[in-house]
Length: 360
Picture (cartoon, helix red, strand yellow):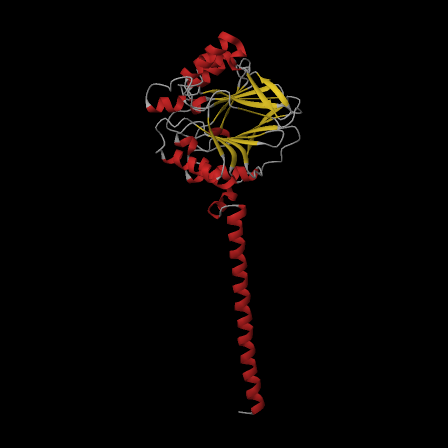
């Protein structure tokens, strides 16, 4: 072979090898960069195992100035409520039923709201349809303050144990839910507050009697929220017996039974829940016939009732008794159900005007 031709061929081969090596090096460098990015994302931004929750993130417009928004997230036959306060604080109450889809749906919803970390997280009670997905929410976003129900011998419950571990891993302050636990706005402008009306502390009253399910439900945190002259009551899975106790106390003393002096960042304030002529009521126990009883409905006469339940659920929720009690007390009451509408967003403006709409 001609010497020049041989040299040219050899050079071409060497050049081809160098090009392949450069390509391999570039690919290896790109893969290393991708791996590094994923590691950094997992460590500092978002756990990789939950990344596909982004596919469940609905399109939600930013919250307007002075608005309070309450989101009743569609998590099937479970409960998950997210509150965005006017001062930028946030609260999540329960996390869904723990199924894979509803876990991702709750996380995706939080991402859509732009949540970095919750100021407050509340598990109303230990049932899996409320606790099931809250551990994942805490794993992804964390919370500064976490409220836990009374243990009542349920420490071994898988969903509840996972919730407690997630709260610990998040470094949250953990308190027991009980009457008079409260939170207030950062400033006097756009003042709001929330307060637990039940359960009583175990040091004040005996734990509920009855079956394990009944006692667990009746330990539910009952939360009252007020802003711009509008009021919302969340009752967890509390039964009509708990509702009747609240109604009796309220009837005997008026709102004085639940008055509480709270120290706000800008001074002391007297919290004074008003249950009559309630604007918004979330049906207890997914609209079960054992909750949202006649006495509570008559006292509150809610203008709007929200029901969190799964489409085609086998429990018959919401029951005719629940809906009937509310409509008997206020025939003009609007009924909003997650099994029919999907996730629901309640918006209250600074002047008290409000709107209700579907999300997604």
